[in-house]
Length: 118
Image (tube, rainbow, N blue to C red; front, side):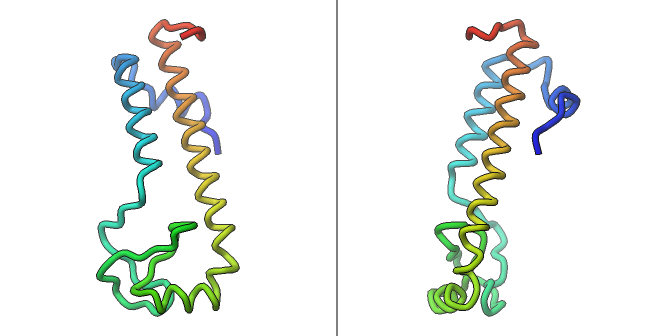
């Protein structure tokens, strides 16, 4: 869901510089493009066993497994049906985030006196 103008105004730091805003946007973009980091490993999505390493679905990056055996078994039994939907949902969420971040930067540029031709 896109941010409202009120949300955007609450987010924009009027004391920041345009360079700070652009740096922040680049940093957020880097975070979005980075592989997911899981500090506390969730249990295996197939067997429930605690995970000692991270092995996740490379397409949707939404499910985690304790090993290849569980990953293959879950693919056959369940995950194959839901993977594309989960991947699309993650893609849409990332796209909405970028859209909102772009609105924040545009508003910040206007607040700092830069016109649309920058």
